[in-house]
Length: 500
Image (cartoon, rainbow, N blue to C red; front, side, top):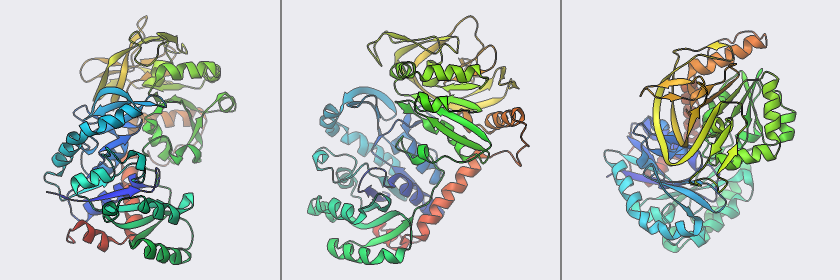
C-alpha cells in the first residue's frame, strides 16, 4: 500500500492546492510514483477525464505535476455550488443530485465508502499519495461526519502538515488557534507546519517561529516566499482577477455571477503579448476597449442571462459587438448569446425561459442529463476573417443544455463522433462553442492573436506561444521554489519513505 502525506490549511486559499501540486512534482522528480488526492472538492472549475468523468481542476494540475493522466479517483466528490445554500453533488465523476448544505452534511457518512474506495484504487501501484484537505480542520461545527480533513486523515492514517498564510496577517494566531481547536489525538497527527506566501527577510520571522514552536511543540518545516505562479487556480477566489498582466493585445472577459471554468482563458493570461481584463458591471464594459470579448461558462445560465440583461451589461456587449469587436461564447456564454434559453424542467430556474442577447441564431433547451466528454473536432469556416476550415481542435464538454441552430446557421466544428458543435454568426464576428479549453489549442489561439496583430498593425511576435511547454516551466518553478525552502529530509521522514 502507498505511503501518504496530507496538507491541511488554517483556512481557505492559504496555498494547499499549490503546495500539494509542488510536492507531487518534487516527489516525481525524486523517482517516486505519486498521485494527488482530495476526497471532497467545492469548485465551479472542473475538468473531464478521458473516460468522461467530471473532477476538480486543482487535482488535474496536481496530476500534471505528478506527470500522470488525471483520473476521477483523485477527486471522488465534487460539489458545484448553484446557489448560496446548495450545490450539485458529483460522485465519481457523475452528477447525482442537488442538496442544500444542511442535507449534504447529514448525507456525508454515506460517502465514506466512496472516498475510501477511490483512495484505495488510486493507491494501487503508487509509492506515495499526496492528500489535500479543504478549508480548515478547525471548523468544529463540521467535525462530525467530516470526510475531507481530520476525518479523512483518520480513515487513511495520514500524517498532516499544516499550512498558514502569512500574507493575510495573523499567521501565528491562525496556526495556534487551529491546533488548539483540535482534539489531542488530532493534534498528534500534525507533524509540522509551513508558513506560506512570505514577503521580506526571513530572519525577522525566526523569533516568532521559535516562540510558536515552543507553544505548540510542532516544528516549522519551511517558509515559502510569496511568488506569483501562472498556474490554474481552484476557483473564483483566485487572485487572477485582481492581477492583470500587460500586453499589446487586450482580451476582455465578462465576469458572470456564477462564473465557471474561468481557466478557459488561462492560455491567454500566460501569453506574453496579451493583457486580460475582467468586466464585472456595465461601467467597466463602458470603459472597455478589448480586441476580443469572451463570455465564459456559468453554472446557472438562466440567472446569469437575466443578470446581464437587467444590469445593462447586455447593452454594452451589443455596443462592443457593433463597434466591430469579435465575441466568443463558451458553454453557458454560448447559450447566453443565443435568441432564447428554455428550461421546461426548471433545472436552473422557475422562469421557464428567458431571452438571450440574440447575437447567435440558436435556441437552447436545458435538460436534466449532463453531457461530459473529451473530444476533438474540425473547425468549419471563417471567424474574424480567419479561414479555419479543417483546423483540428480539442476540448471537453460539461453542460446540461442542448443548442439548436436555426435557419441553417453555420456550425463551429464537426466532432469526431460526427455531431456538430457551436455556431459562427453569418458575418463571422460572433462564435459560440461548448468546448472548454478551446484556447488551449496552440494553432487556434495563435491564429486569433496573429489576426488581431494584423488588424492593429502590430509587428509579428518572435515565436508562437507554446502553452503546454509554458505550463511545465511554471510547474518546475513552483517545485523548485518549494523544495528550496522546505525541509525535504524531514518531509521524507514524516512520510516514512527513503530517499531515492
